[in-house]
Image (cartoon, rainbow, N blue to C red; front, side, top):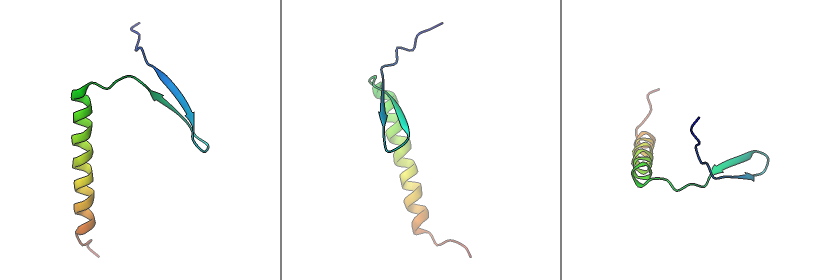
Length: 54
């Protein structure tokens, strides 16, 4: 079985327990995430400006 080599930390935030992976994210994956996030934000802003049908 392959090891994932996770570097986890846990934080209790007002009730729920969050577990974070502290590893560095590869640059290409980070850029893809930024691009996807920007596209989603653009669509949400555009949808907010368009009148909704009755």
